Length: 503
Ligand code: ADP
Image 1 (cartoon, rainbow, N blue to C red):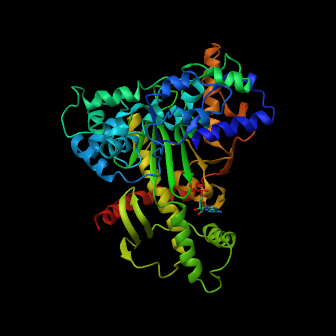
Image 2 (image 1 turned 90 degrees about the vertical axis):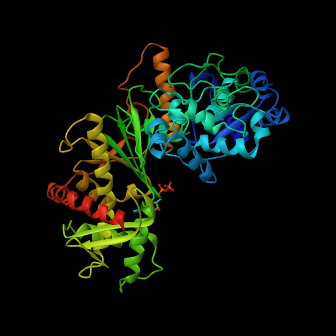
Image 3 (image 1 turned 90 degrees about the horizontal axis):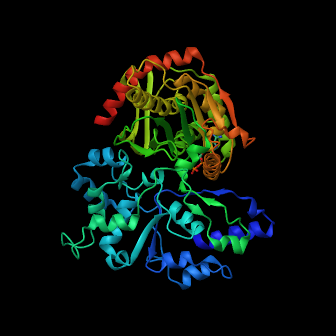
């Protein structure tokens, strides 16, 4: 399917007379964690693609895939492999310290481990394992392309400190038989050979485009291929962050991203190598209870309110929600924790409300207070974690304001009342990022930077606005009086959160 979609995309561009010959450098973004298993016939097929046929036809007839159904990020069937990996390496914290994350089902190392155990013969027929990003790059290069270290940070195999594979993790994930060794070869060494050397230079020219694309579509034979990266690092690249910028994605679940100069892995976060800057790391906090939980609380109190009708439209419900946010203000007597789904940050489940620091069933004086409190509680949790991360990274006192501005993306980022609470809690301006297809844009920026570097004209201050009209839009300024109240509330919030975690 992925190969067919490349054929389709290029054919469509061709029918629109896209000027392929003008393309100087190609990069790309692939969904993170997914993996592709190339067979022993694949490299020679890639080297000798025949421009008279589609990619799908010849890759299929030459049986280039040892495993036809690639595991993707949505697979969560590897809990046993995660537990095993954590146990054998010395615990989830040790795994996080090495690879940037504790064991996660979708992470490629655990997917490989499952294949080793359940389909050892297919594993042995695999000559190379690619991520989705390096698979795509391999097609355009006409040869195996390396795994880039940012995308590779989502595997539970790469040591994010040394930016190379960790031999112990390889040994555990590459084990396909109960013997300590098979054919005198260590499992880890076998897996290392299948993965190839990870590429730490995200702007490296890997080579010229395969002749196939020159002949079939009219690309210039001089067009360069650089490492492709994962969709998450590419999205981050598209935002063109400065130090102190924090990105918050308000999607179905909420994600917080920021840059650090050293890795600070925790059990609650993911730490990734930066896709182009060797001196930076990306810290990523993923909250399960994001928009869906805000929506749940909205509906709960909307439906309880006599003047409302359950069948009203979504926009009528958000309007009601926003009116409450607009007329209410932070109340240091009231705190709430809304973990409708099992939360990982912190590890807790359930809904808990506190009035004057005592647990309460609800805010009897005004049940609608839950609307403001669910939003501020989510943002206070983010602020606490981001402040800790950045102060640890810079080795400075937490009192120093390290967050300079917040950038928002995702479904709820169109809601300015929610963003006002965000600005108030963080005490900084909130900007909305308006560009669409941000993963593709990040990949395009990467290609553009590689081209500048290749032409000895590299600009690290390269600005996305040079390329795109869709820049960032200032959407909320902090209100100092509210920021002061939230700052005061943080201590009690942390204390009450500890009580909730212990329940
Ligand atoms: P995903 O994370 O699945 O890509 P989106 O980024 O599109 O999803 O976000 C979807 C979420 O955005 C929905 O769950 C919805 O609750 C939320 N959302 C949509 N419109 C609004 C709005 N006006 N105010 C607040 N939240 C909204």
